[in-house]
Amino acid sequence: MASNPAYKNIIVTKIDNPGGLKVGQIQFNRPDVLNALNIELMGELLGALEQFDKETEIGCIIITGSAKAFAAGADIKEMATQGAIDMHIRDQFAVWDKIRKIKKPIIAATSGYVLGGGCELSMTCDMIVAAESTRFGQPEIKIGIIPGAGGTQRLTRAIGKARAMEMILTGRMYSAREMFEAGLVTRIADDEIYLEEAQALAKEIAAMPPIAVQMAKDAILKAFDTTVEGGLEYERKAFYLLFASEDMKEGMNAFIEKRKPEWKGK
Ligand code: CAA
Image (cartoon, rainbow, N blue to C red; front, side, top):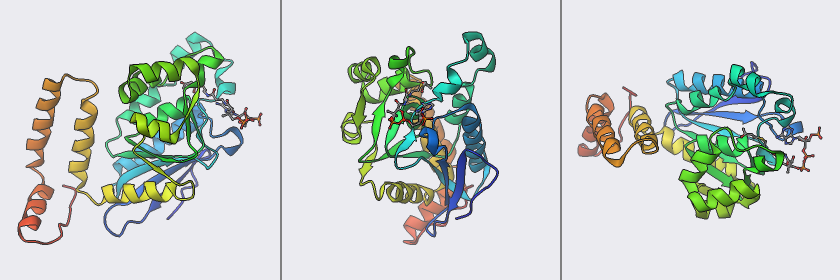
C-alpha cells in the first residue's frame, strides 16, 4: 500500500492483489464533520477516480469512509449560504455525472451514517458492501430540500417506488439489513471486517479480464436508461466486440488447455 499526499480530504491507496490487478482505495478524511461532502472533497474524489481509471495496474476501486460515517451528506454549512443562481452557475453536482462515467467498477464500503449525498454516492457506485452498523437515509426533506444528486432516481430504481417514497418523504434511517432485503446492498458484513470484505470482493473482480469487466459494467448500467430491446442490442454489440480482444482468445484457449488464463487487458 502507498498513500498519495496530494489530497486534503481523502486518503488514496493502492492495495496489492497477487491474483490480479491492484485495487484502488479512496477513503474520506473529514472526520470532524462525519465526512460531509463539500465541493473540494468531491473535486478530489473525481480526480482520484479519474486517475485510477487511467492506470492499467488498477482493476477495481473502493470508496469508503470511517466507522462512524461513510458520509453524512452534502456539506450543509457550505450549501446553506448558496442561492439558486450560484448553484446553477457553479453546477457543482455536474461532478456526479463524471463519476458515473468511470469505466472501472466501484464498490462503496459503508459503515455508520450513509445519508443524503452520502447515500446518493453509495448508489452511484456499482456495489455496496455494508457494515451491520450502516444507516442509510435521505434526510434532505428535514432541511427543506429533496435529494439532488440522484436519490429520487437511483433509489427508486433500486428499491422500488413505494419504499423510495417512504424513505425520501420521511427522511428516516434504515438499517443495512433492511437495505439488503430491499436490494440496495450487495453484502452485509460484521463491523470489524466490512472493509476486508469489500477488498476481497474488489480483488476477486480485479482478477478478471479488465476489458470484459468494463464492458459488463457498461452494459449493466445501460439497463437503467434504455428499453429492453435497446439494451439487448447494446449487450450483443459489446459481446461481439470482446471477440476482438486478446483476453477473449486467452480465456477460451486457457479453458480448452486446462490452464489458468493470463490476462493482458487488451
Ligand atoms: N454537513 C455539514 N456538517 C455536518 C453534516 C453535514 N451533512 N453532518 C454532520 N455534520 C457535522 C455537525 O455539524 C457536527 O459538527 P460540529 O461538531 O461542528 O457541530 C459534526 O458533523 C458531528 O455531527 P453531530 O454532532 O450532529 O453528530 P450526531 O452523532 O449527533 O448526529 C447525524 C449525526 C444524525 C448524522 C447528524 O449530524 C445529521 O443529521 N447530519 C446531517 C445529515 C443530513 O441532513 N444530510 C443531508 C445533507 S443535504 C444533501 O446531502 C443534499 C444532496 O442530495 C446532495
